[in-house]
Image 1 (tube, rainbow, N blue to C red):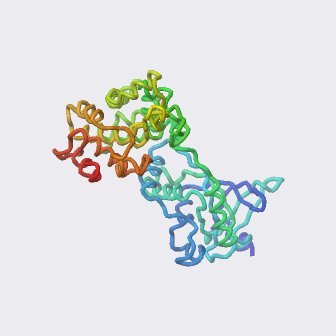
Image 2: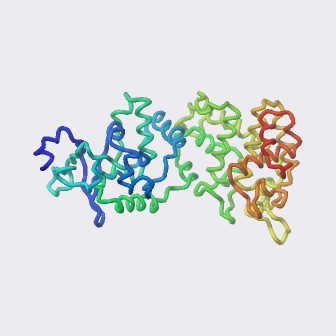
Image 3: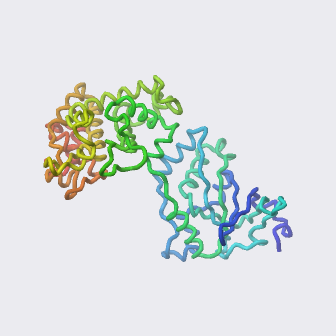
Length: 411
């Protein structure tokens, strides 16, 4: 019995769509309101999917939701941006019975164009939607709707709707969508970003600080051995988050001086006022690591600072890696948070006291064997080591906490 024969057009979800096919896979392109996403999309961690995925304890079709990312990054993006946009969600239409999707009983496509491709898709309300791609976006939509129902309810997101065939096909769709997709690097994303105030300030710093001018990699998340750049844009943005939190407090993203920078030109004087505070920190850092001056004067290459030069008997320096930059920013932030009027003098002293050459003294701190270990714990341990080497930490506070957290072999 067809949907219209059961008078279900009124009860069903009705979506204007374009019908398409890639090889043997049929799909429909359309859009759904945030309200419909909240009502019909069940996130992969929902136990209702156990039978569809192969039974509880069986093979799962999706990774667990990264709730912190949804709450702290994606939801604020939706709530705070007038021009937020999501790429399409790929949703599998799954009958509540777990049986293959059937035309007539579960859905019906009513063409309205001569070629039969444009039309209306009617979906029975008993059909659930599984996000084969976009579960974090779907979760953010649902959460944003809870927080601001009036504004979010009518908003729409593009969707690709695919029929559920069987468990194996569902898993294969998930694999195809996630394994074959290659997201751009964080640095490229930042390079194209024009809304985020921290990124806007970073772009200003890339012009105002001589060492960074034309030496910031905007294409990748890490530097190749032969790269002439000194830092990636992703690393620089993360360092600025660390420093701005120290300068403005834990709610720095909500400070008017920061929020006012959304979508304005990096050359604007308001950006310059914030950038100046960061520039003060970088000037202390660069002035007290003499090798950066050698690089700017063409006497040494960025590659040599990272990898060393066998002919000269040098091994390279920890400060020249992403870990080094973020550890220095973390140490500087601790000094600033402790409200030291002389933070710049203390930072300069610590930077000059450290032996930055790669070697055994960094084992368990910034290095594992001969490799610089760019991890969160490594960054924190290195920051503590920098401060301890400068004779700081006995007085407690943020500095003391960092020093105390450093590994014993850093003492």
